[in-house]
Image (cartoon, rainbow, N blue to C red):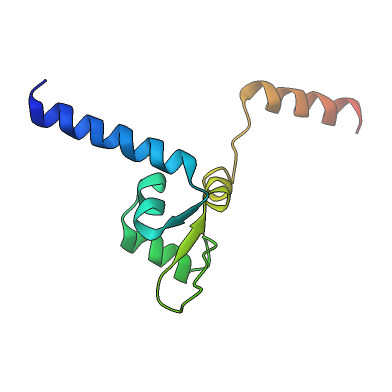
Length: 93
């Protein structure tokens, strides 16, 4: 790995470390965590899919726990969970 690659990797590690310590994020940080562009995050806010705070009517802020909750919605059950649920329905119908 060359110097540029090492620098890029160190910058990413630094960013991950900084974000781990924060609870309130700006739109750039939120976009990074979500793997989206800031424009995509703004659209999700406009569509009321992601909760955001706008204290000064200019900048958007996000709670990390709200972003995590959004990312973890619509959980898909495992095959084992589906099988147990089917057995329960058959036995207790």
